[in-house]
Amino acid sequence: MTTATDRTATDRTASPDTSAGSDFESTRTFTASAADVLAALRTTEAISSWWAPATGSADPRGTLEVASRSGSRLLELYVEAAEQGRIEWSVRLSTMTPEWVGTTIAFAVEDTDAGATLHFRHHGLTPQCDCFDMCDAGWTSALDRLETFLATGQVAYARDSFQVTKSISASPEAVLAALRTPEAVAAWWGTSEGSADVGGTLVVSFQDGLQRIVIAVQPAPEGRVIWAVREAPLTPDWDGTTIYFDVVEAGDSAMLYFRHEGLTPELECFDMCHEGWTHYLASLVSYVETGQGQPHRHG
Image (cartoon, rainbow, N blue to C red; front, side, top):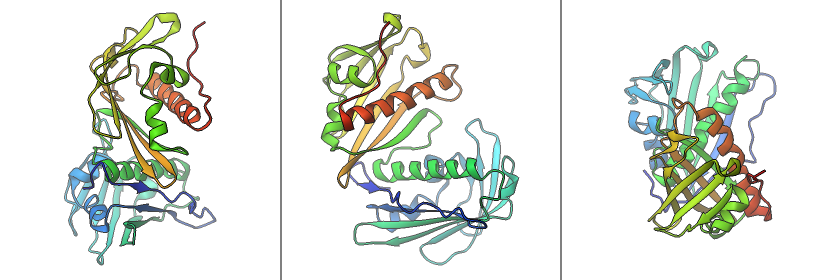
């Protein structure tokens, strides 16, 4: 596993070829070693962290079972014996996407001067499949979570959190600055008062003050901001949850790994909060990159 100080970058320029008959493919580059990338594919604990809850065996000739967030069985995968630096899973059962049955999921990992490159290919998942668009988005998201897992060492697919990864064309310092004063938070999220310093209490208001999210700013290592939610009257499910912002350098840009621990799909507010965070994190990116966010405004 990599540590929070490792740097991870993604090759977004090589998008999958979606011409007739082509498989879904993606290439990712990491500063983690090839051994670290392969380790994230070789145990059920690691696979559960970045993809979905997994049981069984991820060893060659083992059977790997993958479940949904609610615990229902999704996939049965046979782990093929593969050459060094390569992992292959053959899909034997797929309850949600039966078109996957008979397909093969392949990871080829090689060391580079800067770290490692992953060549991912889902053989048989083509644009002709009814599920292709959904699976394209699903694999892209899962590989993003693998990126988070390798970069931060955090459990990237925990059932106890909502998570998003954002690439921001700015320095890590600029991203962190947008989280460290009430004025900056108000520019991308909502009307804010109090203190965003470590040990301070930040209050962010919505709906003409009916919703007042009271946040205790926790101590954190360099590159991380931690907000512990103490009160949220209109979304009491937030009480006791914790919001993490991990920011790392990625070339000339920064990667933001956002996690709202405790905000789960089982909560009544999840769909609304999912939409809310999706909007406000885009607002944060806009604010950092252009100086103009899209925060909530009273009235």
